[in-house]
Length: 109
Length: 114
Image (spheres, each protein chain N blue to C red):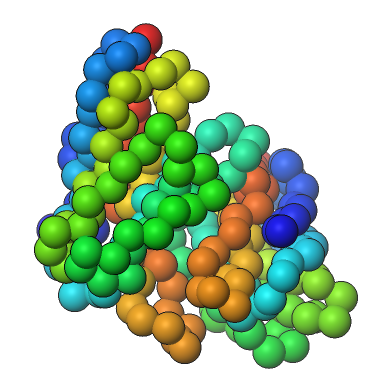
């Protein structure tokens, strides 16, 4: 089975950094995705990790440790438009995705 | 134009009615998926298809059926809707296996069963 845990909510100030953690237990691992979802909208792809280490994409970075079943998404230089839910999704060996419940990030001025 | 289009965007209907949600894509992807999203539960997979006429159950397929008659179209049906099927439904597509390419989501269908 799948068990993916991430915090429910986080709040941060504009210009700051926020780190969203995701821990997972899965039968067969084939990559981890992070998605951003604004309220009432479609999830959009942010990052992908399949090997251990850090992947950087502009203001967003994602880290993976397969041995620990752990990932984080780092959002730097926060902007108001970053207020959204962030979804951690683990791809299993059968290529299906299992999603965490999402972390709602609120950016305050 | 959106690459993954869902219709309708919103639907309110009554218990016991049959409902069909449509999904079409212009991305040329082989794989298509239907999810539902409920507050606090995240996205859960209902059905998925890896090719035309290929149908596979996800984790919560009871009460739902799907049809994949063409590569670009994947429809989801609720044969007899019940209130606990009230949710936000998303269609998604992806390329084949052994890829780092993500799933691409439509804009969602908000379904309310009264």
